[in-house]
Length: 345
Image (cartoon, rainbow, N blue to C red; front, side, top):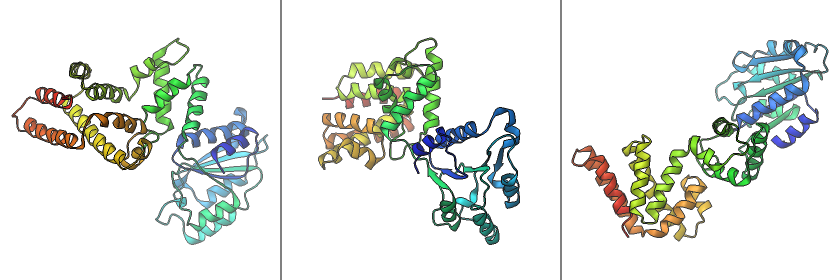
């Protein structure tokens, strides 16, 4: 079952007895658990009909006691169990007898109980426990959203916060996030935090603009680097120097900038070589583990360099790094020399 189908069922109050929710998107899992709670539990009797148990403390006795108690003034009670290691851990969490009893109990859960296990990013589908669960209940994997899904999700989230955002600004936000890359580190919770920062910054303004995003986002540094790289790609040394001054005025460290530029040259070289082999920027992003937006930038910038020139620049970065560390050159001078070389036509 998919997240979207489960959401539809919960909204229609078609809630089953047994669920195992797992996957990368813990934010969506927490959201679904909260929606199930809202559908089943009234605030007046929450303490009597809603029980939270920790997986590390779970025993079969505790589980059965919680499930068998009848709900008070309600059709169902809700029991949630977070981080139950037996579903994914390689080490044995339950004895063989306990595991057999738990598998048998999956089929005996009363109709008056909704039991939800959640919190694990992965489960081991080879385990007998998981196979038994799949027959008795519903296993739902919460994967990263696809691009069209993320677009809609951001729009809905912003609307729920009382603000508006247009497709152009949604695309701008997504393009600067690390959500779709091969080694992407961000999740929906990171996006939520970014949007909340933007909304707090914009004050009474009704519509989110790119200027709002630029001012407070965690990718401001990345965006400023791209502007510097655009200047370099256009061989505009004077503008590149201005961009450098702006970054330094904001407190960025020269060494960090040099490492970032060196990595970018590596990406441009890899992109150029792969483009020559017929790869598209999207394919390149997946192959070398960078954001698609970064790959498209590298594809454009690679046109301004030969493979030989890019290799020369990488050697120059190594030489400048050595010169700085040995005290033979000032780091600011080294950076300016590197920019001059990169902008050389």
